[in-house]
Length: 290
Ligand SMILES: Nc1ncnc2c1ncn2[C@@H]1O[C@H](COP(=O)(O)OP(=O)(O)O)[C@@H](O)[C@H]1O
Ligand SMILES: [Mg+2]
Image (cartoon, rainbow, N blue to C red; front, side):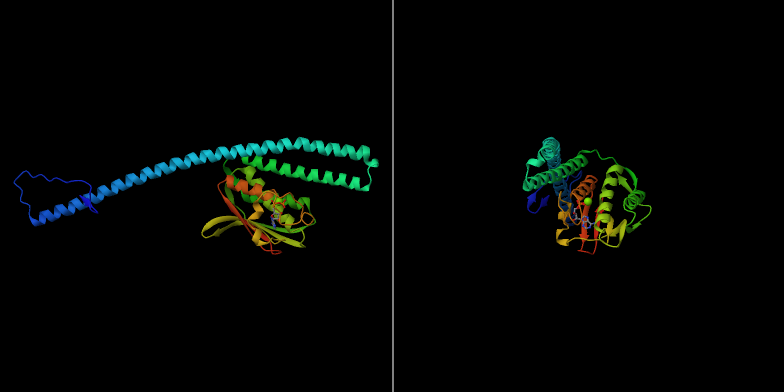
């Protein structure tokens, strides 16, 4: 049995009677041995590929475990750092408050202004730490998978936003009957961040439209939250999801820049993906799968 000049084996043919090996029989036997040789070669290749696949799978598993451990360590490190930073920060806040109350008169105008600045900066740092803790809480949480009525969650969130600012003219168009499988609490946090952003970044327009639904992109079902508000420079579309990344001035649109990072973590924890499209003053659309 020859395959590409390599001998894979030998076929012996035994006959009970005195054999008469005719040309025809010989050529039949040759075809047979060629076929068997190919079969054997296929089987050998298959075994080799299986072994490779097994090794690869084992390696992937090992790496995954290592990565998960490293991730957990990082998470718990960032959690305890943020947590521990709170108490000295509370100290700075408290002592500068004491300084302000008890010794304000001894400070000149400059001194008082510096003190005010210290307090503003510590408050900023406080919101950053709260943001970090919130993010790390999302990552440490167990994800449960349940059937979630996304349309009615969206309706509730929209109603809440209208209640908070009834004077605003914002129309919500929410596709009815949308069901998903995921963690109800986390999906609500996710949607509420996207809705709050859409609400906030349409705030400088007289009226606004916010849409929530599902569409097909390249044949794949994709969720979206779209608004016709301030939008953003598309060059920074990827950056938006980094913690504390903000494309708008705090004086125009207040915020701590942790919302989209939280949203992305939630989507990732559901095995999905999120991306954004936008144009300055032409609105933004956040697409996600999970
Ligand atoms: N709907 C939106 N329209 C325009 N820009 C947005 C929208 N949502 C998010 N962004 C941009 O992404 C940044 C990050 O969003 P986020 O993490 O929610 O932070 P925050 O809401 O605190 O500003 C925002 O500061 C803004 O620049
Ligand atoms: Mg936000």
